[in-house]
Every structure is written in C-alpha cells, then in structure tokens.
Image (cartoon, rainbow, N blue to C red; front, side):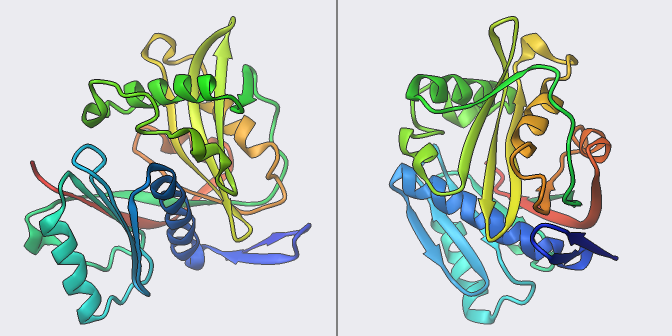
Length: 254
C-alpha cells in the first residue's frame, strides 16, 4: 500500500512507517536531551539520551539489525543507567529480555496527508515559558510521571525545548481553563506527536482530539506517524491513522 502526498510529491508506504517513526522519535528525544543538557549518543543502530536519576535513559532503536558492538553498548548503557530505562523498538527486532526488562507492544500508525477539521476547543501553540510550565504539569499528571514528582519547573520541558527546530507544544482550553497538552515534532518531512495528555478534570470531553487537530492543522500536506496506546488508538483511527506495525517497548523493572 502506497500513500501519496500531493504537495510534497512523496510516496510513503506502510512498510517504511517504523523507520519514519524511529527517525522522528530520535529527533524528538535528541531535542529534549539537548534542552536538558543530557548526553546524546548516536550510533548507526540506535540513539540514546542519557539523563540523570529522575529523567533516566531513553534509547531509540533506529535499525532492525543492531550489530554485536551496538547490542553490547546498548546493554552496557542500560546496566549503568542512573535512572529508569525505556527503549523504543518500532521494528520489534531487538530482544532485551536478558536485561531483566519488561516488554509490551503498541502500534506504529501512519496518516495520509490531507485536511483535518477545526478543533472544537481552543488550541494554541505555546510561545511563553509560563505556558510551557502549564503544559508540563498537564503531561506529568496525565501520564502519571511519578519520576518527575515532586515537581521541578522546567525539568520535563525545559524552556529551550520550544526553541528546538521542528518542536511545538500545544495547549487546549475549555472556558479559559487549560484542559490538555501535546507535543508535535516535524523532522525530515514527517510530523509525529508525543505526550498527548488530558487533565483529569477534563476527561471524556474531546480534549485529546482537539490537541491532535490543532497540531495537525499546519501539517496537512505531510505524512504523519505516531505510536498509539491502547486507549489512544480509537481516536487516532478516527483521525485517519492506519496501523502499520507493532512497536515493542522495553522498560527497566525497579
């Protein structure tokens, strides 16, 4: 199956979606790592962002065939990490069971270039540090990021994050109250979305849909990818996303 972007004249297949998501996720976490001042390690087969005890280690598998040296380095990084470890493998080809990590799968999804409806809620792009702090709190609460509690402003979303090329943060509001947030990343002609979160006070009111529509509004001529949670998948399918492949995630057991 081939999907065509009329404005960019670029064909995108479901088969290449894992690679597109791998590259975009690496771009997002590289930008995040740089904004936090963390070490970014680049290899042919993976990108790692080595953070502190609270941020942990994030590893993004970039190729389905890690060589022995890469696999050994990945294992060593995992063993010596100061904090929790999360590994994203959109190819589902790297077995990390020997490291005592737990694994689960979520689908990588692809959306055709095409128009989207206007969001039913007020959605704005974050431009000021105080609004970024609000988005940060929504994401920490919405995803239950206990590792970032007690809260330290700017730890999850440093002020310089929104200065990173291709990175945008969005807020959705209901009657003037912030109800949701999310991050959009444009890299190499592909847009993807992260941390789509709804405040607990505004669940089941279309907040996630509004954030997604607001984030997609300026990228309708581009292919879009994402990795969907079980709860998020029905929303993304309703927005035109199609499941391309299973992505395997690994996390340290602490």
